[in-house]
Structure formats: C-alpha cells, structure tokens
Image (cartoon, protein in one colour):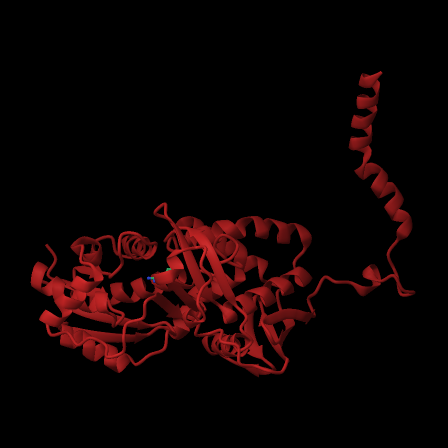
Length: 398
Ligand code: ARG
C-alpha cells in the first residue's frame, strides 16, 4: 500500500476534498502539484488552499514553455483536431502534467500519483495511461472516481474538514483551460438542443470594432513571429488568442465521442489554436508537395485520435512524430490573417521562399511557361484505362 502520493491539484472543490480524503481515508501523505499550463489564476492562493486542505507539500510548476514547445508544437505541425474539430486542449495538457507528477514523485519519494477525474471522462485515461508509460511502478489513485460523493456532499465534506470554499459562487459549468484553449461542459450544455448561453464564453467575447490583419511567420512548421516581432511560442499563442478572440471567433459547439463510449456535448473556445492551425495548414498548402500533403492528411486524424485517447507516450505516436517532423522541412513563410467584426477570421494571403506555387506554371497571362502541348498525350493516357473499359461495356450491350 502506498504511503505518499502526488496529486494533480487544480485548486477546485474536488481536488481539495481529494487532498483531505486521501489523508483521512487512505492514510496517505499528500503532495499537491499544481501545473501552470497557461490557465491563468492565482497560484499562490491555489498553494495555500492545498495546504489548508491538509497537503504536506504544495508545489506549483510553471510548465507553459515546455507545454508549448513539446506538446502543443507537435500537435500544431500535425494539424491535430479530434473528429476534425477539437484542437485537443485538455488532451494535450495531461501528458505534460503527468511528466511533472512523476518527476515530483521521484524527488519527494512518493510511491503513487492521483488525479481528480471522474469515471466518465477522457482525462482519467490520459493521466493513468501516461503514468504507466513513464513510471509503471507508481500506483495510480482516482479518489473522485471511487468515493461516489454528489457535489453537495463534497461541499459538506469540505465544510466539515475546514477546507476554505472559494468565496465566489462556483460556476454551473465544468471548465478546463490552458494556453491552447478553454473547454466548457455541464449545466444547460448537457442538452445538445440548447444553444450555449453567452455566459459560457470568456476568450471569445466580441469587443473589436475595426478589422485587423495579423502576419504570422512560420519556420519549419512553427509560428516564430507575430507582425514582425519574434516571440516564444507560448507568448505568441497568447497574443493570437487575445487578438482573434476579441472578434468573437474561435468557438466550437460539438457532440463528440469520448473514449469511454459516451457522446458528450462540448463547448470549446479556441481562437488562438484554431487561427494558428488554419494558418499552418494554409502554409502547408503552399509548401508541401502533393503526395506528401495527401499522405499527411490521411495520418492526421490518426495522430489526433492517439492524443485524444491518452496515447501521447506510445510507439505509434513517436513514429508519426518522425514523419510529421520530416514533412515540415519547408513549411516556412508567412501567413496573413484578417479579422473582421463580427466573428470573422480568414487567411487573406500567404508567401514562402520555399513555396511550390510557380507563377510561370499557374498563370493564364503572357508569362505562361506551361507546355500546353504536353497535356494532350498526358490526358489521353490518363483516360486510356477508362476508355478501354467503356469500349467493353459498349460491346457487351450489343
Ligand atoms: N472533452 C474534452 C476532452 O476530452 C474536454 C475535457 C475537459 N476536461 C475536464 N476535466 N473538464 O479533451
């Protein structure tokens, strides 16, 4: 039986009750670990709350840079969107959190890790499968999945245990957020027929009144500068999120297939990630050779599925990363995004020194260098098989 556990701690009600519960019910020493993945908020208060709940140690780890570089960047290069829509906000952050939980467990001599997920979601899968990939010797505990408390009972438990409840009324929604976007579930959203009320949105409240253009420079598949100023990836994502979000663009309302067999209605706000994914894919259209582009497009949904399903640390994911990395060799250049109120963001232009767009081949003007005479023989041979088949059809009908 474990003695010390590292708990992924958010500062919310469930994980606060989990701190106390793991101590009282299982006799464990709890080390609370809060990971800063760009969700915002006051981490000093989060730390204090963990200690007030009974943690022997409360750690805050700033993972923003690493998260952007090692987790978001590969997903962006792979144009990863689950079911063609969701840029994997929560799915991408779990493996980086697990990495730090495992490191903390080693450092502080813990023999288990724990998370506050319920049994109905994908995040439990991601936490536990990632842990088994990185540290198969650690036990994984899921107190919230086991204790069967209703929300009201959790509140009462917290009150009895003297855990300070947040003064603000807890939101009726379940929210997860990091620098790649924001997810919203529960409450009225559980009825897929109901339009989401405006109060679910935070990153995409329309405030901009004038159009704007953003120029994003890419190098080997990654955004490196915004309007001429170089920025670290995590800051660049933040800037694009704020700029594009102010046009009310970047909302997703979808019914998705969870790994555990449930369909769920999800609201996502992803102005930064969707804009960067759109710009990146557009630059690929300009720079990737056709067969490479088409094969990559076939692999992208597979890549997104692996991330969604908790298989970030897995051999197929590693192999696909190698393919994707190689594919990005010439994905360098600039993309111009144009935002207009209300709710519009489009690619307005793209250019690259490594582009495969050849004006001399594409133009219908005088500069045309395309050898028109070559087309005749090409088209005849291209259609030869079909022509032969059609001739047989004609003979059979006689
Ligand atoms: N359905 C999304 C996913 O599986 C969002 C999950 C949000 N997680 C959460 N703990 N609220 O990635």
